[in-house]
Structure formats: C-alpha cells, structure tokens
Amino acid sequence: MTGRLDGKCAIVTGAGRGIGEAIAKVFAREGAHVLVTNRHAGRGEKTTRDIVNAGGTASFLEVDVTDSAAVKAMAGEAKKRYGRIDILAHNAGIFPSTELVKMREEQWDDVIDTNLTSAYRAVKACLPQMIKQNYGRVVITSSITGPRVGYPGWTHYGASKAGLNGFMRSAALEVAKNGITVNGVEPGNIRVRPANTAAGREHEESMTPAIPMGQLGEPEDIAYAALYLASDEAKFVTGQTIIVDGGQILPEAPSGIA
Image 1 (cartoon, one colour):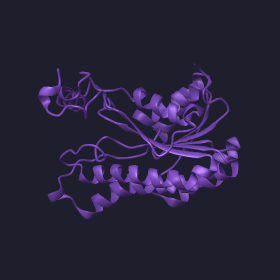
Image 2 (cartoon, one colour):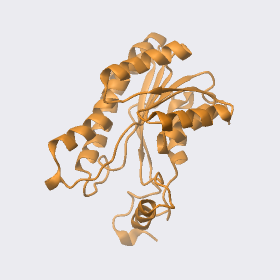
Image 3 (cartoon, rainbow, N blue to C red):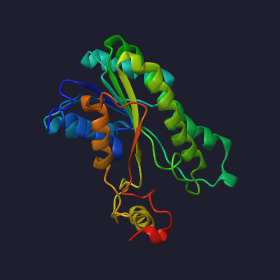
C-alpha cells in the first residue's frame, strides 16, 4: 500500500538522524509534505535532500525544541509552507546517561525540558490549526524505558518518557471531540548508533541478549508504527502506545528467552 498520507502536511521534530530521520522519509514516501526540523542544520538538511532526491516533498527548518518561540514559529512556518498541519510527529529527544547520585540538577532539567516539556510546546503550538481543521494526528516517540522498564543512569530519561505517556493520554481526551488523535510509539533498543563504531558494537552486544528476537530494531521499525498512527487507518485509536521492542519486555526472567 502506498499513498497513505497523500497530500498531508507533517511536521517531524528531531529528524536529523535515527528514528526521526526514518519517520520523515517514510512519511514522505507515503505522500506527505514533510517539514523536517532539527536543531543541527546540517543533519536536517541532509534528511531533506534525501527526501527530495527520492522524489518526495520536504523542506527544512532549524528548530530547538527547548525554545518556546522557535516551536511556535515552527507551527506557523508549516502552515505558511503547506497550508495545513495534519500530522505532528514529535520525536526530538536526548538520552545522556548519569547515575542519580552524581546527577546535577541542571542535567535533570535539560533532559526533562528537551524530552517532555518540548512535547507540551510542540503539541500546543500545532493544536489551534488542527482544531480549526477538525483534523489532526499527533504521534509522540516515547520509550519502553520509563513506562515499562528502568535502566541505571536513566532516571531523568525514564521520568521524561513516562511523563510523555501521561501527557498524551490526557491530551487525547481534551482534543478527541476535535477530530484529533494523540498516540505514541514506545521503542525498545533500536540501532541508531553506527554498528561499525565502538559505541555501536558495545551497545548491540550488551542489549541483544535481552531481546527475544535476537537483534536490535531498525529506525524504520518505529517509523512504520508511527505511519499507522498518523494515517486514517488509525482514526479510532487515541491515547494509546505501540510497543516496538522485539519482545524485550515480555520475559519474566532471562531464562525465558529461548
């Protein structure tokens, strides 16, 4: 099936690499006009070029999601360029690792602001246009870390992602009457670091044994879940999340992995 987002305007935040890049490219392949946003211009511009070179429609806007004025301007620019805001795929986020006993308050604040408060900014900025249209799809990238599981060094990250799930459920209730759905995807361990780097190899070797399917996921695995939630096929789904983790949260104990 192709053309599932034909003519729709989609904003994708954090689209410079990894999951956000994959979401932007999959949405464009399905016919969306994509506003690619990222705080690093070089990465976002590359994603945009890749989409255009593949025959899709996309343009780039440099956006720091911790800047309220920039996020508000993002919504205005999407309306200006494409006439509508049909889809917001809010993916921007960071995942530094710091043990709680060593964590400084500014480190906590940075993760909460970038991962959680940014969702409030982005969704609030896009809602007036979606309400005016009586149509909208909000898809937020959450995580299994926080809502389902924990991991040492990620108290701030886990709190931010668990917060996203609570945010999206209440937001979904508020805008359901306006033809707007609010949903999320909870990725497990996804191959976002290059496998030919030391960090990439270390991450893959440490996490693969915990995944029943025996491998890390790919960014496109998350993008296709986001595509479903952004499409009209999911018009009666709201306030929900889809877990995409290769079965990682299922085993009761390590011995449960065959």
